[in-house]
Image (cartoon, rainbow, N blue to C red; front, side):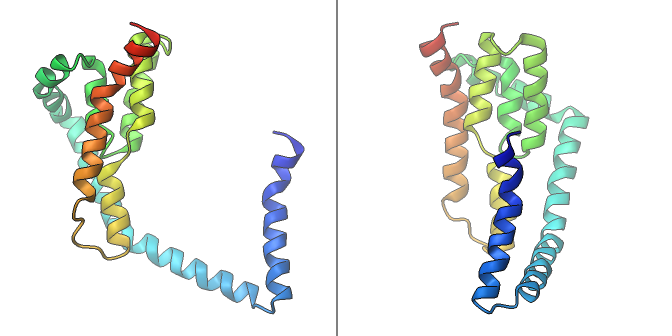
Length: 174
């Protein structure tokens, strides 16, 4: 890492403290107050995150994720999506870590420059952890009705699933 990169954070913290002193703000008291609020947020989100982690682990360990991926096989065949990326596309809205491990296995078995590796890369870069984000962030601020957020996010994830192999073929060939 270059010298500037090593000094960015210390300079930023020093600047914030100095600005607080100049504006006569009790910097340490503000820091402690913010840390308390942050810990309270973590405490409130912990059950939600734990539930998601347990659910994803159970889906993978039970083989249910593979069964669900096989059920999506006609859809993936219709859109010419490789079967190997279907589990990754299904897991991505739920768990970033889970989809990342599937992504890594696709790259290890097929290579990053293969059609499959490129499709998985585009898919990984264009999807989001929709269910995780809606669950965690909306529960953090107390939103009970997600309205159209969930549907729009899942529609975007589906579009990424369908269009990833299309654009890899269009730009890089198969």
